[in-house]
Image (cartoon, rainbow, N blue to C red; front, side):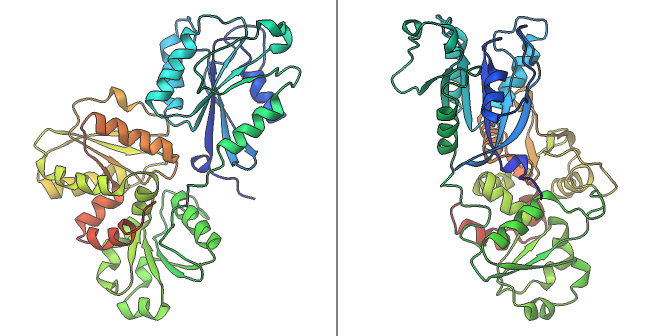
Length: 400
């Protein structure tokens, strides 16, 4: 059985001072030992992730982090990693013990969570070690506080149940909400990408295929070079056509006007971010000048081959559209700190299939605050091929 991708799991992040029992608490909630537990402060250094299922929320991702009161030489680097994790967190669990009285570090985390609109709860651990009259931990009336003992399993079931109910997502309607309905036939056109091993497809394609089946629809997958005319597509009678961005140039002249069409990348731009904002950024392309810095951002770290989308195709499209000599900066991987990026005139982002919705929204927010236009690969390619309005139409008529 294929496990749910990390990008489709809600993230629960545990923060707190050293030796408050964050790792023990996670182990108790998991019912297994994910994290090393030791009486020595600072046992956890880099964030540690563990996939878990808690009903009714379903698949989640627990993240254990370094102590927020770390005073070692690596303090700044470790806390920077913690903040990077927090930006894509769906629930923040702030852990402390009854001996804490000043709450300085805890209030810093609360302030950060409130600024980033991250839901949070407070967990007072190790209550088995103290008299009950000493357990007077007070924050604002709105804060949810749990008193537990990871060692004695006190309050663990209640905490686990709350997390499951709190993260049960009744609002996330999916990638194809309002676009695909029961018994629809979806025609998917994609080349076999050389960067993926034999037997593998792009993660965003797999996610779309699965959701088509979940909605009671069905799909046909075909390579672009197998399509020779419009009648071939008409005879298949699809209700919707979804293309890989690299197939657009090959088949755009064969796309029937009567059948809605979009791309995998634009589906994800619509699902995980703001498609309309991506589209608005198109005009910024034509304001670029010689020497301007442009960021090319990919969430995955695949092996780059000849004809790579981020390394070759996207830069070449920008050179053709602008006629300018641009400086390209390449970023790849899920863990990136874009707060340190300056002097950019434009940024291009992949579909983001390896990112959670909150992570992509966080990235968009950073670029909005920096007033740096951010475009999606699929939006740029559709614009370049003259089909952006047609490809956006099925998506902009629905709210995701």
